[in-house]
Length: 327
Ligand code: PMV
Image: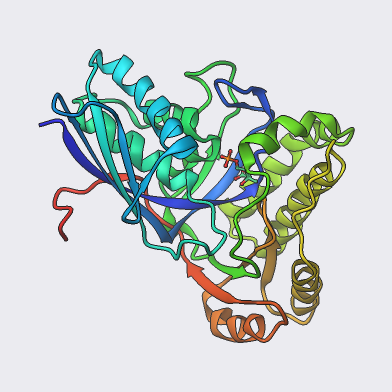
């Protein structure tokens, strides 16, 4: 009673979300498409109890205070409000990917927190309602609720801004070789970054062109067309970074190794290796490839100056409840 555990994958956006129309509701400036990452997961247990005098949050065994705890509490408030309960919660969360690897965990964290908290309070919600709720914690978290290849519809209001599966995980076995060039925490996180997007004169053009990129990406996934996918996801990532670099103040996330990887990946693709890149709000490069080329590509990546490590993820399933957390 009042306790549940959920597991959720992180996700990598092929068409990026950058900028909000409404910051409080996290209604995005544009729709986005992503793949869940089965290798990079969060498992979260939530326990609501009358005995607790405040919310608590433990992340990878470390008790959290400050903004991390406040953000989790604000998210729990939405769910408490929906369930009509007023109990504090103890949240215990673990990521299976190395902390400090520079991998954002907010998507998997808020998807797992949403699914576990709703189950603990007996809220029986449809997947799209869970997705919309997760969005309130972190925009990209709404894409970690459904499984596989996922599209987030920007929507008109809270209920219509949710994500759903466009193809299941086994539709196409793309791999994401997450190439870590820095494990440092971002100076400017995505929540503040989104509010700078509209200060770039390029954001309007990027948003206006999004339906075209969404269609190309959707088509590429449905047809399993790697070349078409490579072309659109690289363009999309570069457009987002062009917006970041031209906002006030500018956000420059790249390191020399980031640019070196971009150039090498484009050269390897011209030489016949299916490889393309995308980059989130940080310097690390997500290299998308197909299984037969995985080992060769990983070896090439590890030889590049500045590369610290390479993590591999395949298409992941939906956020789900874990019946026996001890396993
Ligand atoms: O969900 P947030 O606020 O962490 O924003 C995610 C922003 C990007 O990772 C850069 C792009 C995306 O669509 O995931």
